[in-house]
Image (cartoon, rainbow, N blue to C red; front, side, top):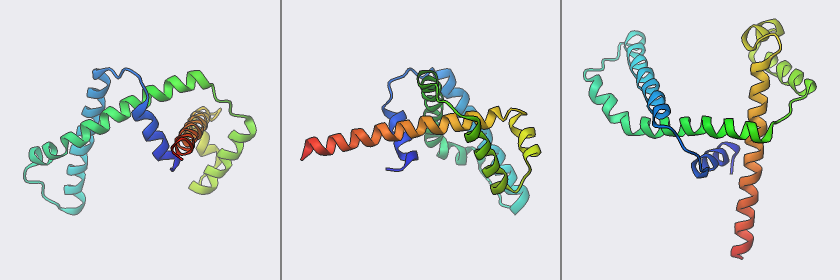
Length: 151
């Protein structure tokens, strides 16, 4: 099971209340993004969307499901970040920043402009990675235990 698969399954199974307002906000964002993508598609490729309402209606169920997942995922991540309080050392942060600079072909100054002088945004990304690693470990342990009991 990949880290992303484990995370998605964990979020799906996690017991947490998801306020409808958050789901609606995410859904509205997805709809706005879809409309923007159609307009951009028309401008860049000349593609014609004769009936945007029908196209959007056809995507609605999928977008609602994705909106619910994203809203729930945000809540789960916030809760686990509070519970686990993942530590990120200066060495880890520096190594990640240098890796990102090499990968993106950018400078440390540009990276600090994007993530902030203390690289707090990048630190948050690393903390989330650690939470996902924890989740993956938990899901893999659960999977192994269920295999052992079924033997």
